[in-house]
Image 1 (cartoon, rainbow, N blue to C red):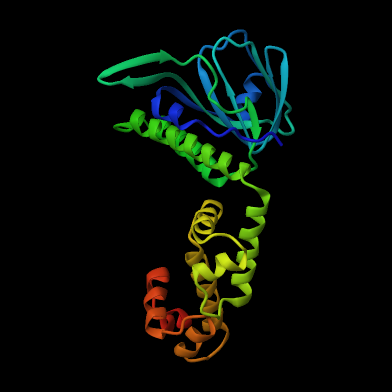
Image 2: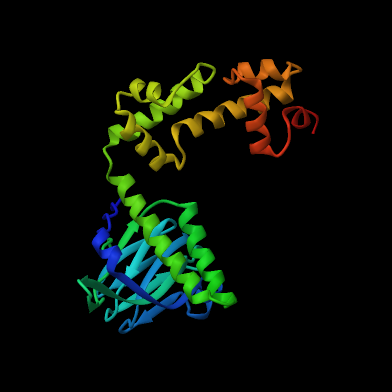
Length: 281
């Protein structure tokens, strides 16, 4: 797997895109082009995410395999060909754009035309990422619907996509021992959720500093360690509510909530109903 390069934040700060189009290349598109798309000379920057199928990308004679979960980009002035097959046509969303880089020196702004690729590999496999798929699909829908302010909204989705890519880069570049530590912490939560665990106890269990553990855990799961632990406890409570006739107070204790009133408040906040109503639903 080709790893992501982490995007320089100086680049991001000065990056100013102009959105030209957002398109989807689906199976019907390839039927019209006989599964062969040729551009003698590309004119725009293109950033694409493959969500299905497989194909072959050729850029100035260099070949790159495209599969579901691939990100690829094309800069202007390249000879490009994409080929695919009827049994598994490559399907992707793509941003078409131009960009410049702005740099402020005091009150003076310097503008440089963007001619190079974005600071990521030409083709990279990131596996199927629901967040990336959602960002590309939302941008395509916004562009297709063309409601008020759609160009600005698509630009926001494009920038959000770059940030998601940057986060993936950070995650892939972390030491594998950190990833193992996060998994170890999750397994410990699953086995000891009834105990009065704290963030610091979890960090010490996997031999990481408290601050680094919290930051790394959220980066890999999207939520804090305590939020993850609460989810495990809530799942236990839901199971007991449906599978037993234990009193609410006892279910709270069995699920790691020593305070049944606090448990009930959290339960209502998450499900929109009380534990009793959930049991009877």
